[in-house]
Length: 124
Image (cartoon, helix red, strand yellow):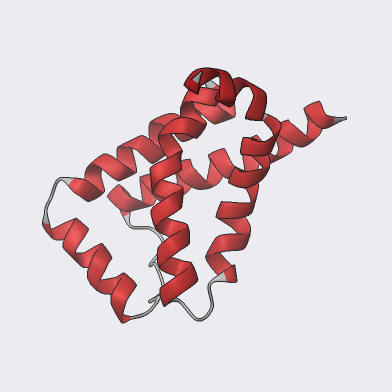
C-alpha cells in the first residue's frame, strides 16, 4: 500500500515541479502576487539572469526524474534547498500560504518521510 502512496505523491510533486519549471521559460500561467517581500525576492532572482533559470532547470530535470522513478533520493536531496526557500518565504511572508504549502510542501514532506531510511544512509 505504501508503494502506491509513494507513487501518488511522487507524481503529484514531480508534475508540479516540471509544470512550474517549464512555466518559468514559457510563461503560460501568470503567477499570482504573493506579497511584496516574495515578489521582490523573485524579481531579484529573475534580474540576475542566472538564479531563476538554474532553479527552473532543476525543477524540470529532477521533477522528470521523480516522474520516472529514477534517482528519487537524489532528486529529493536536490529539491531540499528549493523547498526550504519556497516554504519559508510563503510561511513568513504570504498571508495565504496554504495555496503553496499544501500542494508543494506536503507532498515533498511525505516523500521525505517515505524515503527517510535511504536519505539517512546518504549522510552516514
